[in-house]
Image (cartoon, rainbow, N blue to C red; front, side, top):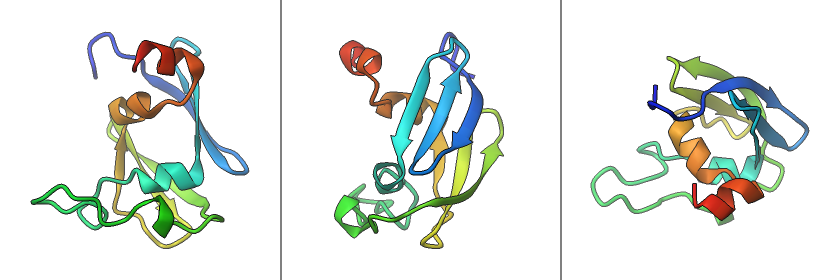
Amino acid sequence: MFGDEKRAVAIAVKSNELSITWDERHESTFPFRALRAECRCAFCVDEITRERRIGLQDIATDIKIEDWIDVGKYAIQILWSDGHSEGIYPFEMLLSLCPCSVCVDQGT
């Protein structure tokens, strides 16, 4: 997958966040709204200019994850309560967004 990168071993949708436990038992938690605002699909980010079309200010504060599916062994695709489902969230990207103190300190 990513060489020595961590692998997702458990994914759980909690009341207002997505939790991913990585193979080294490190856990990342992502608030729904912030995660939805990070979608990088062509609807949310212009394919040519890479300019973001949908930002945090455009996401409802009560957004929820309705469901998610594995995309190979490298990502998940999320179905959001606002009907959006085009985005793919690669594990490498999710690790780079991890808000835990260990990752923030390491600049992951």
